[in-house]
Amino acid sequence: MIERTFGLIKPDAVAAGHTGAIISRIEKEGFKIVGMKKMTISRPQAEVFYGVHKARPFYEELVTFITSGPVIALALEKDGAIKAWRDLMGATNPAQAAEGTLRKQFAISIGQNATHGSDPAETAPFELVLFFPEIM
Image (cartoon, rainbow, N blue to C red; front, side, top):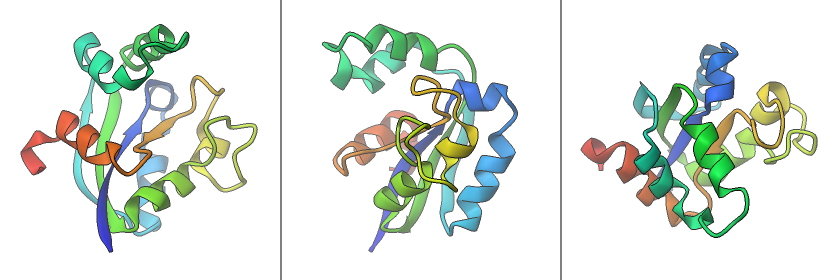
């Protein structure tokens, strides 16, 4: 079943010049990019985006990091897109990520892990609307 999911190339990967390689890999894996924009996320938008983590001790660190520089927001489409994107990204902790995943190749640390993807499935529409209201 064709699904849409939200993807994000985070500030660490953008600053390191990995945007082109990540986008190329996304396309090679059969995703259709139906929305893409380079932007800097505002603090209010980041607070909504990471709102589910507000009570957690790492919340402020997440918000500060995601607003620290440009990101590439992506609306991705593919059969089983949510799981396929999570699989391509790899584990949150790059030390535990499988060989061949984006995080294994491009992440610096668990905090600077190059990419974000919607998980669970219910978050994809929320995140897509937050960044791509024009295509929803």
